[in-house]
Length: 361
Image (cartoon, rainbow, N blue to C red; front, side, top):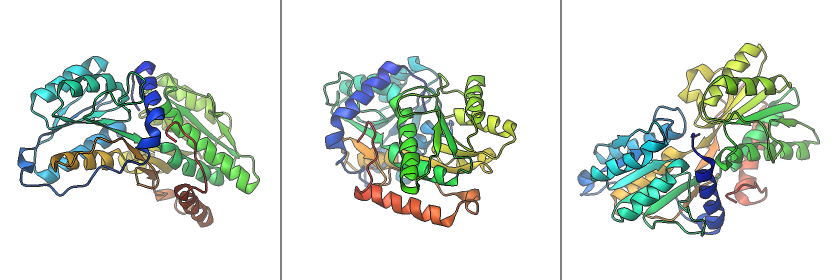
């Protein structure tokens, strides 16, 4: 997750809530095969302050954009931001390098992206995790921006159900970096999944760290002592599954788990932690996938093919924009019957039999 002001995030979320009725029906970005003019196409990307090697949000977006560039046989131009003051200059730099499509990674870049898009209507802008509605009127502030949004509550619901069924302690935990909707959407879905398990099974598995309205947060998105202390506090309450939401904060949670000496499973977010960080492989039950690599790739390819669609995209279980990772090393630790239930639950969510609530639905 990304370190930025709550004001910017609230703007993006308010817009997302207003547009979702139309956006939910928008198709995924068109896939393309490249064309005769592909060699002239210039794809570009600007990171949030997390950097392109954050093993999470920025990295996934970069990988999708890079994949498109590689398939097109062109060079990807990129600008890495170290702080919020870099956003506008980095976007201006990309414009100055004759970019045809610019990916802005994260809601923190919304205002700067809108400004750049309005000043450069011939460039296709792709904005990750923000609706580009900074004046709260329910419409995008620039017509040439494609917002990419993700209803991760749906995938988190599955992870919550799985965690509840896996837990021997009858307690699972979660905490976030900062109390932004793009963070709490994971926590909301996770708790709803646990609650659904309790309803189906007649159990009372408890969620520590989030009650549906508020909970435990570190105050930032860094792997630091504060994040470790928050994780330790939740672990001290007896949980045996823990889901940290906030990019690098999982590293502090992992350290706290190791020092606890207890058998506690970790649930990752954004990317499959088992694949992105080998140090987690003995601890990761599953990860909640936010497939930004796929949606950024498809949006960039559609731009390259002259088929750019600026409608808002919302990733769901149905369109593959979100999901959960394989069990990997936990394959033999999880009852096969439980996974059969999780698979069936996924289909029930897709089919509308089970409703998952979030600010995007």
